[in-house]
Image (cartoon, rainbow, N blue to C red; front, side):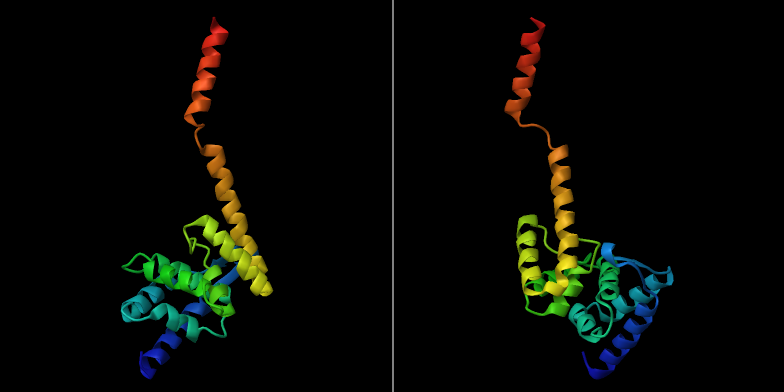
Length: 175
């Protein structure tokens, strides 16, 4: 991106961030009006062919990471590639030693940045050790992983041997 594009992108970002209000930091919640979608659509049309996630990260240095994460959450659902560029950047940021990039990557509440939950949990444990300031963000995601695992345990069907044992016990009880 040239200087004029960076200036234009910065102006667009400033307008978008003015529309975002943080409502609950512990739950990574933000509010915004409907007009933000038009602003984001215009940004996407202008910059989707560029390395816009890294440009946004760079140009948003003084902006609260949760607001930046909120914008990336909107971008996940607003791009032609269905957020794959944003997700790829988030995964890359989590492996860097850049605290700000990691903070922004973890501030996007709309989707897990890493699909392998065991790997993600190991990454989070390492991040909170290396960057204690990010402990609450890591805790948010660790709790989310735990809830998913609990739901999987509750909703998983019993294995075939348990099912057969139960069936045979019912048959034997009837005789």
